[in-house]
Image 1: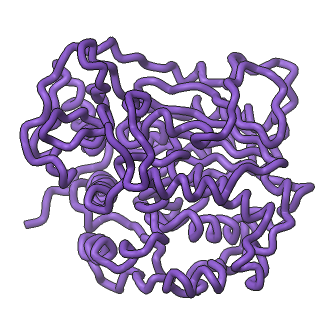
Image 2: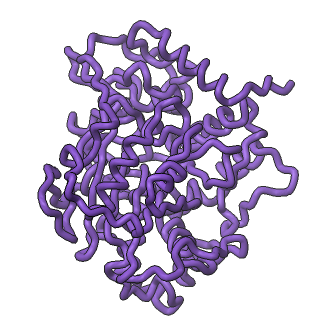
Image 3: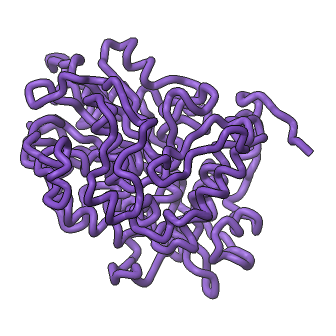
Length: 453
C-alpha cells in the first residue's frame, strides 16, 4: 500500500511540532535505537542536563562584526561542497542541500557573490569526490587516475560525468574558495593536496595528478566536518545502516513520505552501480548498500572513520598557500551527574540514537564514547560533545596539527583558524535542508568573511 504523499512543507511542520511537544529529554525510542545495530535494549535513563545553548546565526561573522572598511572580492568563486548523502541542484525535487526550502546559492548570488554548488558521489571516497570536484570546477571528464582505479577495482572514468566547468579559467591568478559541510570539508582539503602536489602513483594519468597548482584554492572553510573522523563510522556494522537510514530519511522527507518520489543519484557509475531505468529508489538504495564497494576502503565509511581520517590526514598534510578555517556545530548538553552528553530535544530523530550516551551493557553512543578505534586511537570525555554524528573535537584542525582561535587577527596561508561553535544546531540543521531553520545569515557571514581574505 502506498503511503499518503504529503506536501513537504506539511511534513516538516508536523516533524517540527512533534519535536516541540516533547517535554523531557527522553532517550530515543527502541525503534530509533534499532537504527544502530549495536543497540538492542532500553536506553539509559535520563538525568538533568545543563541548559542547552542556542547561537544567533546573525552573530556568526568570524571574529565578531564585519569591519566596515573591509574590501570584499565577490568575484572569487565560492564553491559549496556537500557532505555524506548530499545531492545536487537537479536532484531532491527542489529541496536544496544548501538551504532546504530556501536556497543558499541563490541568496548569495543575490548579494553579489559568485557561487556554485558541487554535486559529488554521496557515499564515494574523498579521492573519487575530489576528482569529481576538480572536473566540475575546471570542466572536462572526471579522471579518477589509472593506478587508483586499477587498485580499487572500478573504472577510471564515468561517461556521465563530463562537465562544462563552473570556472574554466581557474588557475593561481584566478583562485576559488571552497566551503565544505561535513565530509565536504575533507574532500576540499584533499583536492588542495592534489592540486599542490599531485600524486606519484597516478602522475602518469596527467591532469589533477600532476600537481603544480599551488594557490588555486585561496581558502578552505569546513563546517561540521569530521576532520579527525567520527567513532560513529568506525565499523561497517554501524556505519552502513547509519548511512542507509540517513539517506532514506532524506528520501522520505523530500518524497512526501514515499521515498520512491526521491530524485537522487548515488553517482557510482564507475562502480557499475547506476540506477536502472524504472528502478525504484528503495531497490536502488538497497542494491548500493549490498554491493561490493563496502569491502574496499574506497568509500565514505572508511574515510569518515577515525582511522580512515587519520590516514587521510597523514597523506593530505596542509598546503603552504591556502588558508584553513573551521566551524563547529553542537546539539548536545552535558549531564550534570555523569558528564555524558545528551542530544537536545531539537536534534533530528535520525541522529539522536547515534548521539545518545547508552549505559553498559549497551555499546556507548557518541555522548559517552570510550575505548579505542580499531586502529588504536583512544577516546575520552573530550570526544563526547557532538552534533549528532561528529564529535566537536573532530571539527577543527586534524588531531596533531596546530590551529589558532580566530579573533580578528591577520591570517596567513598555511595556517588553520578556529572560528567558533554554533550551538543548538545539529549536523543536518546547519545546512537547513530538513528543517525550517533559516541558515541564510550564517552563509552570508561566511561568504563575506572569505571574500575579505
